[in-house]
Image 1: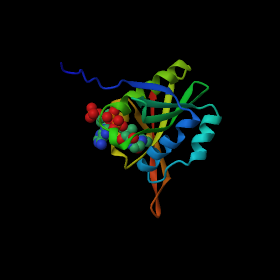
Image 2: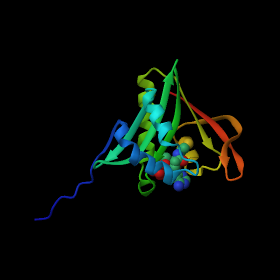
Image 3: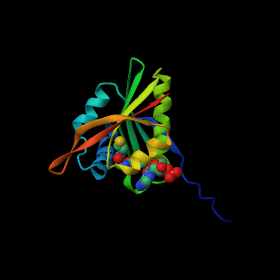
Image 4: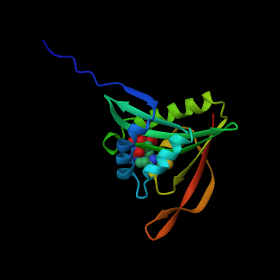
Length: 154
Ligand SMILES: CC(C)(COP(=O)(O)OP(=O)(O)OC[C@H]1O[C@@H](n2cnc3c(N)ncnc32)[C@H](O)[C@@H]1OP(=O)(O)O)[C@@H](O)C(=O)NCCC(=O)NCCS
């Protein structure tokens, strides 16, 4: 008799402070200038919409969103490096869009590094438009890098 091997399902749930060691490990392996533990702690404390995506109990990615006065801002979206290109980032983004809509936001803004080809492709594919540039917004080595401001109506 052959066993039926079924991949565990993806689940979305609010981030908790107990998740921070796993989240910070992903964050540090993903960005040249990662957020610190206290930035994540502040987001949780402030009541921002902080979500993790899990599979079989393992955090595969996370996203942080603020919603106020009909506008939402995506502050962070990051997938575990080993689990990229599986469609999880797109699912997480769609989940956060649904949350923003649920809180009556009409628009979702975000900033992305000009050099971040993977994220730019994802956002473009999900209907974001470029509104402008924030010059020298991000640290980069000894210099700075521009941020692109993107938005999508909800
Ligand atoms: C950006 C990120 C969240 C995408 O997550 P992901 O789970 O790998 O993305 P998905 O598998 O859902 O891919 C969705 C789409 O994104 C684009 N994409 C993802 N990875 C890409 C890559 N390496 N190169 C080009 N396009 C890419 C493609 O358009 C893809 O659609 P397709 O598979 O139909 O071609 C992930 O690369 C990541 O965590 N990066 C580090 C953190 C980061 O830069 N976050 C964004 C900050 S603004």
